[in-house]
View 1 (cartoon, rainbow, N blue to C red):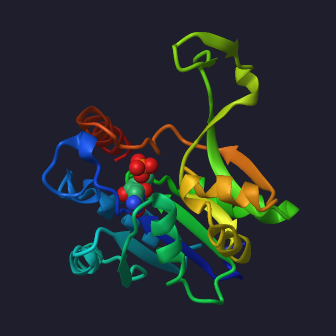
View 2 (cartoon, rainbow, N blue to C red; view 1 turned 30 degrees about the vertical axis):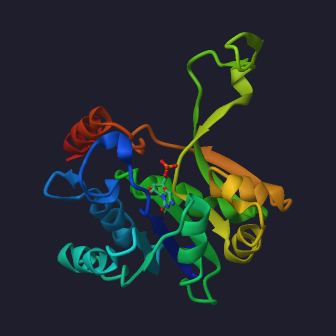
Length: 231
Ligand code: C5P
């Protein structure tokens, strides 16, 4: 599908990432030789199905973001804008920079540095059946309980019906723009939940354990190991 339609990616990186305990925003902590954000931007830039990339970074980091893209030769990543107070605000600010002729938009968290190329292939291939969104997901191997505020178990969920969702998440551009216009968008923890709220059909495709999200120093070390294994 990426061969015939305009596909853009929005990489959101405007969070502070306090749990990493660094003196720079999470997207700019070192990951190997480069800032963390560089890894996912490089992977998206190299994917032939993606035409352009918008970077959403903390206010004041826009210029550093475009320098970084230049440095790593990511020629599709020429636009960098400041993010907002919540992830959804940051996504909306990035999507506003995507040209109107884009048919599909991928939204990716810079906190997930490893973006396997075949994961993006699966997302783009998933639109065949008229889906509004295609998202990567993993099976749940632990047993999951729902609890109350006192920590008492209310129920044990059927894990065969549950999935852990990753990014990039891919959407029909018009549906994503509509979903982001909702006044309560800030309460959505991912873009798919906003598309679901406007009645969009979202399907899951297999995710990838390498696409883990960096929250702690240990996650960073684990992702560096996984990247080294892949080379
Ligand atoms: O906070 P959380 O881990 O859910 O953030 C997921 C992604 O959203 C991160 O890449 C982070 O930089 C981004 N984000 C953002 N703007 C915010 C909050 C988070 O771009 N206000």
